[in-house]
Picture 1 (cartoon, rainbow, N blue to C red):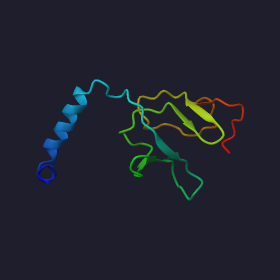
Picture 2: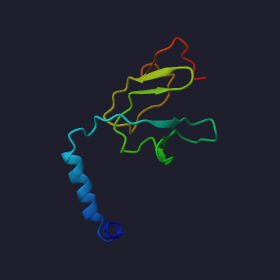
Picture 3: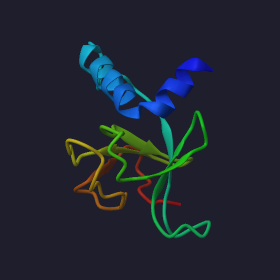
Picture 4: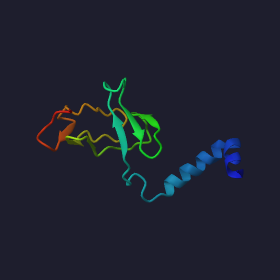
Length: 111
């Protein structure tokens, strides 16, 4: 299609359009989005990663596209992020560190 061809030829112009659109977005940073956190250690995972739920794309937990995390949950518990970092870059996902994650249910084990 013609628009895709233009983006291939002039990606810098397309990037400016995205930046302009983000600056005009009154709800930027206020939307809630969910993704899957796969923690290192099991399933042959060497590091924690995010899986984008809508596409299946695997992303590093240091991906700057993600602005924050409110909570993490599994089949036994729900943990609230107490780190309050400006982005997810550098966030610690050791859910048993109670200074960084507060569990909701009495069973704090990661299971």
